[in-house]
Length: 318
Image (cartoon, rainbow, N blue to C red; front, side):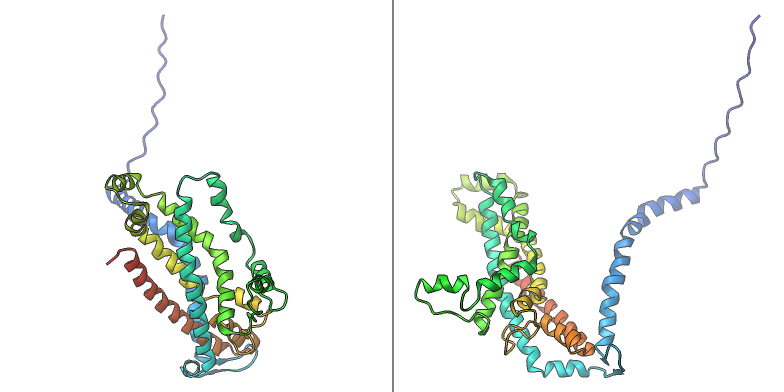
């Protein structure tokens, strides 16, 4: 006799969610999930980016002392800055050092990246070695270069003396101090930009170069008519980054001045960032320093727009 055991009752399946609920979940997944993922960045940017900008703008409208009164002045700080020859001297120094450092830096980086993009022996070692300046602290770089550019016992003046050149007081003149500081910036950042250009060059299809070779194009013509135009977005990016870094230059000239913020005896290499530091943290005039910071922000925007236009023309953009 066979016993038949009754099967246990099947578990009741959960009822499907209502159609409206499914549509809401689908919409949240497609539309809102991206905003949730990027929300932490914008939250941090609002706290550490937007709030300091707004607060600095508010401080710039006051005669602001750290432990004293805070008197509302309106736009008087900006009026004083525009008529202050010290501020315009700092602007001139900043633009001069920026021009002497950024233009050679990007050109050298482009040429260096093009050389490293070819088949060379120990190519990996050479690519890694150009990043060594990035490992070095900017303070150490400035200290070493300050010793190299010493007037009486510096290695640069010793080398120039072999050709009959008298000792140059690199810190004493405007042009010589600009060249010395620009060389520090170039030594530190040329390799960084070269690696960026090299990475972009390796994304260019080799078929384009092979077709150009079949048409009889020389390597130089391929570089200027293929490589540079196809690197236009990367060139624009490095121009933006270099513009921001050049206009906010602080550590190199600060240490070149021996830790002071005067930029030499006559302010011959005082940058706007050094002037902001001096007014805000040495003179404790936070309102004046905040106003100078906002004018520096305006100069960065103008410089970025000008360089963007030039980079588009160089890269073949319209």
